[in-house]
Length: 124
Length: 108
Image 1 (spheres, rainbow over the protein chains, first blue to last red):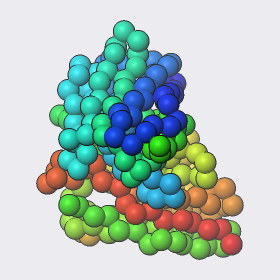
Image 2 (image 1 turned 30 degrees about the vertical axis):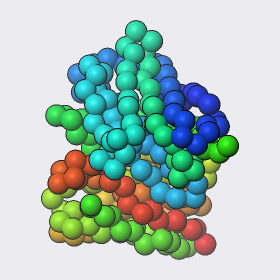
Image 3 (image 1 turned 180 degrees about the horizontal axis):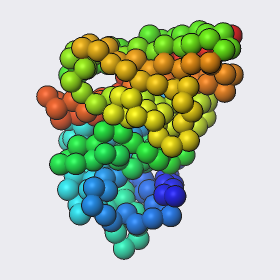
């Protein structure tokens, strides 16, 4: 059973870059149809898709965040990562990594499983 | 951008049926997924392809959709069903994964 675990700093200063890593265990990150996603949830609010990456490296981003976001994959470590640049207080959120489900041609139809999430606070 | 609208809250007595709606323009043409999120936990998918249940999800959970509304139905509601529920679709017009506004289900 695949499990995902986020890691990274819990506090980031405004204007800096938020960096998180998701480690995949219990299965390989590489495989046909394997897309790996980042999703965030602002405190007390709903869910917002950030983007996903195919195991081969192709990336797909939320258009509203595209200028800030870079997602990369390291298949040798079974990890994928998120970088969000020029952060502000509005980027304070719980960040989840998740595996895309039913994915084909750059589109995923659900997300399962999810990591437990990690709270990142943007503050000086 | 594509918007999915859910009622903020639904209250239901134990043993009764809860229906959570997700409204979106022409949502009937899209594949809808539903998630359950309990306090302090990550979301868990409870429905995908609008009416398919993942293994481990009780048969009490079912999904349906019409032209502009998708519905998650929870039959014989239990206290453990109390949670936030989100719908989700892929919107091809904006190349974006879109989540609904979320519904808090309270078991009375």
